[in-house]
Image (cartoon, rainbow, N blue to C red):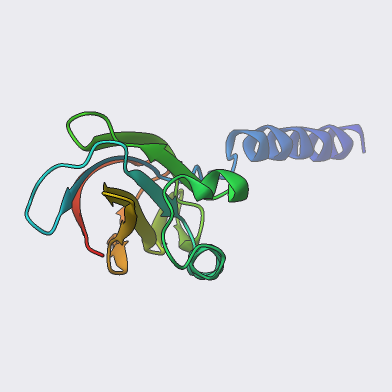
Length: 166
């Protein structure tokens, strides 16, 4: 009887040790470092333009209703999780780092994740002042698509040019 009890206790101890070693993989969402260049329809770089990035289509559409004319910097009134914004430098470039791609489809295969992020949506906003007229410039709807990513915590780096028009 003692031997049976010891065997059963040993089995359960081994089982709990084994289960603690088989920790399930945790999905760490991919992160994107995005360099955006903003130019006008003539290809001239635009400093002081705002680049707004939305990780979901709903937030992008809400912002378009909030700021249909494309006034630069108005995004500051609407910064929420999943929305990133920054102003371009003298070269017409902005680098936005650590964009967390949290929406998409993930599948656990063994101990590894396959993740297909949803696209992100980009809106650039600039303005021109000529005499007393202010003209707002925005890009047509732009999105950045991603393929299927393997692993957890993937780091991406992309460059894109957005052309703005009246």
